[in-house]
Image (cartoon, rainbow, N blue to C red; front, side):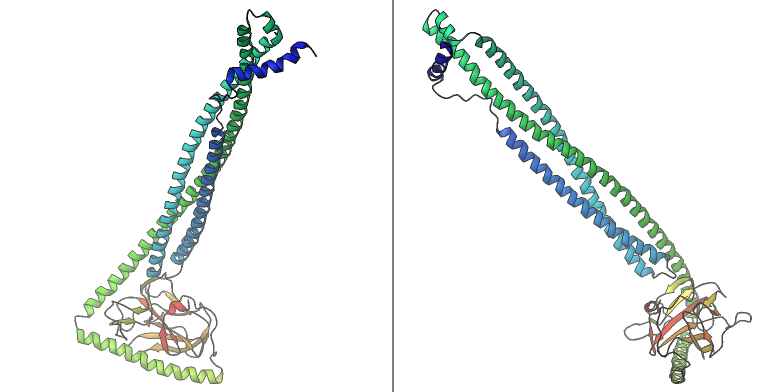
Length: 436
């Protein structure tokens, strides 16, 4: 080992103490940048996770909305839709559309915020890359300068100096280069780790933002389709409501003409109620006898079919139509469903059963009654009695569901051509929709 190599460590230690007093901390160290980048990485990951959760919630809302819309379309396309029920269904659908729209709008806003965060990350990555390049360039300059000075040994520097003071100055410069190299190397490593963390966040954020943007666009397409479907349902509902209002207005107009003689109208209403009560007792006797001899099934299983496709002008239950008699708490009670259709439109049996009545009641209304069991009977009232369109079935005849049993007419106390369809369960009038 040369004398220079033996002396150099001792001189380096002595010079370090003499020149720097044992400690040196330059401004280049920025370890907090890495911690900040890692914290930012965690924050954006949490933000993306929250948006994915919102996207899942939006998808769930869309699925529920699709099911509700399908139900609405089914109700609207069904025979003789219950407009009150459909209207409520459309209103519920509108509320769900509003909820989906609000969730979608929030998702779009969140995506905008994520895009802004991505722009900030891009700028931060560019700035940190510039800092790294600057530190790397400074380190390279120091290494080149140190290499040039290292070609003259410390011993040679001492021996060739004009004075010891000059030698200390020259050796101090060499030692300073070493410390700066070490600190610059640490700064480069820290900047590289920070830049890697930022780049990793940028890459992940960009990929997941793109994925969320595509999913949001797909949700927009689905939302637009739902809105179109809802608007179509509203238009169809409005059309049905208009047709129903028109038919009902015609009936009310006819009723108003008839009601000029209030006494005669009350007499007609009472006569109709009395006729229904009288025939109901007779039918019950027939049912009891039929059940005993096996002519009528004791039970009915299955659903009834609509006997007529038309415009429902009155539902079962309390009504504002003044031609209906009072019942219980209702000033006017309708014991069936009125389905308006042109004269002589065929009426079909709602289910398999035996005809127990076919003809006129005492109030002049022609009626067909079918027993589907000893408990369930359907009524088809106001049917036509004109030649060529009289009742095509007879009492005691077994009929099948869908078989033509009568034609739309205006017999009895009526304000226009329609079918008054009723169901009796154990002698009581019940809503036909329960069986349809």
